[in-house]
Length: 91
Image (tube, helix red, strand yellow):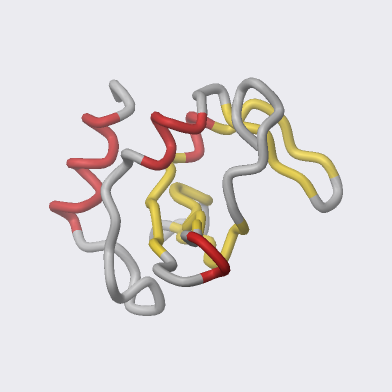
């Protein structure tokens, strides 16, 4: 959910660092009728609330959906993508 309570997408993957601390989540959004799935990297600093079955962000839908995307979410984000994502959200 975004800061206005609008549904953005599903969390597909969690990314932790070498100390097993959660650093990023992969939010998958899809286009019309589920086509065109995009994976957006979201830093944990943007998470406002966590409830069972729901995560709310401190940003709006546009900010989340304009976050950097990547094609291989199961491989995990490389250092450049992590840095670009943090800059996108002001961290």
